[in-house]
Image (cartoon, rainbow, N blue to C red; front, side):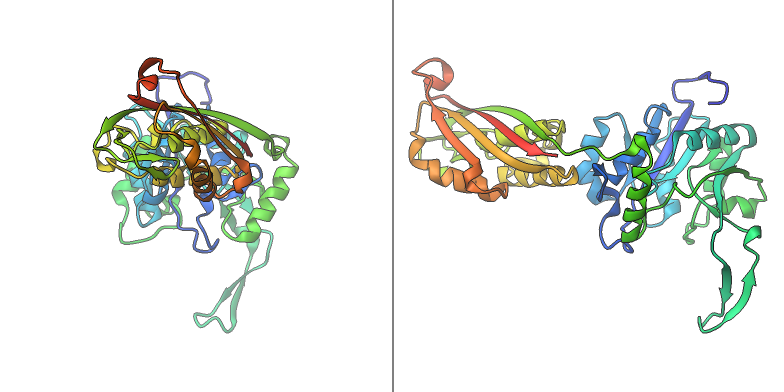
Length: 393
């Protein structure tokens, strides 16, 4: 990074450790809202563009929720282990062999600056390993094992607080992993270098590179963000999305439209239950926040989800919207079908959509049109749906 020349496609890599349970926060902190978007997105933004490859280490639960969306942005995904070092090993397994200098960063440090990242990478490239540090502000005291008395007051000038990114040449990080005692839960990987008697280059950081661990840290982080133009929270705005879907009609299948089972000799065929309205609405909602379409999260090649209820698809979409702090304002769906008649089911469909997407029924519109006998839809061989959704995000 210091000489500005890239020896290979993947010369530098970043491993973002974001598999923590958020015990002290009281919830999953990685996807908690910070300013205008989830915290982990601020962290990823700091590294994206600086590195040829970024590996995000997530819990299995968050991989299920956000993995495919994240991979679509060119970020690799690794499964978190039960300890920090096991998560690091998992992340390192995804690093390409060409990567020569590797940064390891806490996903819960969203305000890290690109200047600090670059300084740490340059120091590691020259010296083998680097860590960012800040001076201690508070008086540090050692207490007894029972916690009832002070044993010693330490000279805080002799101590520093260590942050991330901690950066390493590849051979150094490989030594760390090789010498790791997997039975121990290290606070950071540089701790192992002390046992190996390997020197670490110290890089001066600042207190804005806060690690968000407790609820009050969110308040502190947002206060720092207000003073940083780059991280200034964006104003919420109304966004719109458009969705479209079509399914063939066949005999022997149930006909489910907008969550309503309708008596008819034919039903819609598909990888799921074929609910053309829910599919179109879900695509419209995902489109409103530029989060792809339902095929990304429920690919037709995945045989394990064959026959999945479209209500489950809608639940997944709602979780994605929630992570973006997006609030649904209105849904408007237009069904195009020759048969059966849809008008008798309007009220039930609106009620279902209102309940499924958790919005007022007054903000849900359902209507139907025919194709006047034209094409596959006009011949009763298919049903299509067009949907428009608006959200505030």
